[in-house]
Length: 391
Image (spheres, rainbow, N blue to C red):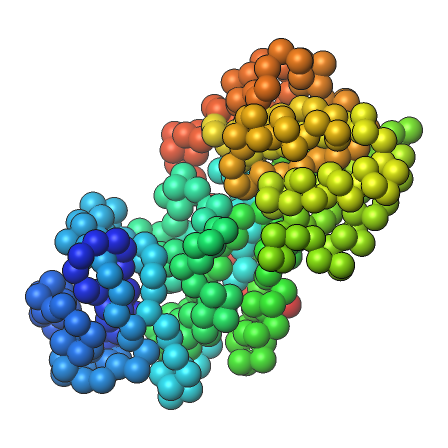
């Protein structure tokens, strides 16, 4: 299935093309007609070669600039979906036989492409279809197979290109198509750490699909290492807790508040997606007796060249984050281990530090040098013959 979408004045639509055995002449004719269409009915080609003008229940019209989208695909050599996919719909999914494709839930790590696992790269280079999130960088996507269909399903506050249920349907839809053997769901960090990978795996298994999870370096571990912050350290922190800072109607709900009800002296608290909740969670921690001088690191886009870091104490974190104008995604690391970072002693020099500053502190990773490192490498991975263990 080929979906073209984006921003602009022209109406565009998801187009389902014939299988891989389709003749080149028919493919060219479909592309030519697509460029002339301005509504769903005119551009509707259903799987198997039904003529134009048919009804495609799965197709949903979206606004796009079709010419720009086609130009991008020609330049990259890939079929790509930028945003705003039409809904798959139950009718089309139920009336197609499952093709036996495996769905891989793949973690891409915290952002630095050099922190990808070999397995993730190998699967990207052989995938037929890749559905990727907002936090998967352009550098990482360059490692994908040139023939793979790339579909953007990213989310950010107030702007979801797809709901979670629609992402479920897309995964099930592509995994059911004849000729497709590998569908990748690319996620930032680890798919099973606040990545909703468990929900996707549960849905796909219920649909009879084979699911394999491929772990990635979760942001807490990757960013902690980048800044020289050990999440546990003898005599400082004997445990580490992961929490999410997502809010419900702008407030921490009762369930979320409980996770900030206490913080022991020898514990590290890592808050994913904590930017929007920084005021609420700070108040919750202070109200529950956490010392106001507890060390905090707020990290925007950690391990990437765009990394920005604020080091401060708990009582001032809201004001310092606002002054630095940090943006999502931002991770919060709270606890005594933050003081072990080489950057902690420099916190009074500036409100915020970038990737070059952090590298100058003598931490372990030069993230600003990593972005283009893989581009200089000829990544050739062995092909493994063994079957993956299903999850």
